[in-house]
Image 1 (cartoon, one colour):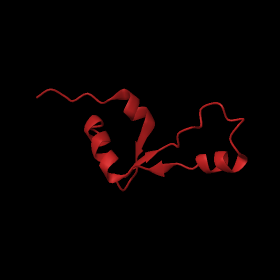
Image 2: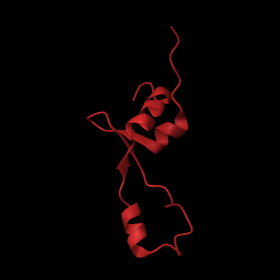
Image 3: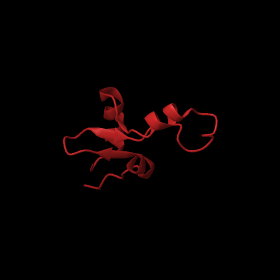
Image 4: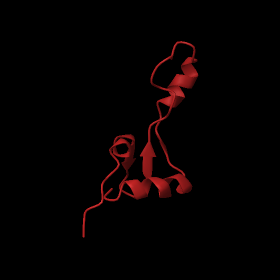
Length: 65
């Protein structure tokens, strides 16, 4: 049986925790940060978890995670 390929872009963006949840980095942190408030940027530093419906889709493209 052939091995499944991992989606490389998803592998770089999502991290599987010990309990099996998928962790992600907040969006809107790459550039154009001058117009965003300090408070907004501070809150964007926190990572968060994917919802169950999104996690199902991502698990399909991360078969060995």
